Image (cartoon, rainbow, N blue to C red):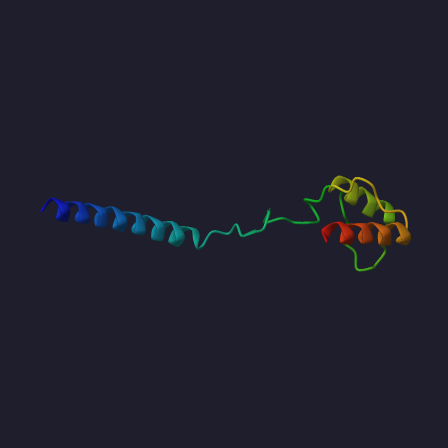
Length: 96
C-alpha cells in the first residue's frame, strides 16, 4: 500500500511537470523574438560596430572593412596574399 502511494505521487509530479513544459512551449510558440545562434533580431546595418550604409552599387571601401575587422576581433590584419598563405600553412601544420 505504501509503495502504491509513492508511485501515485511520482506520477502526479511527472504530470504536473509535463503540463508546465507543454504550457511553456505553447506560450512561447508565437513569440516574435527568433534567436539564431548568438543573434536575436539583429539588424546588421543599424546594430553594426561601425555604421554601414546599404547601397545597390558595389563600392567596397577597404578602410571601412578594416574598422569592422578590428572592432570584431582581428588583432593584426594580413598585409599580403603571401602572408595569408603562410599563415594558413602554419595553421594546417599545427592542426595535424
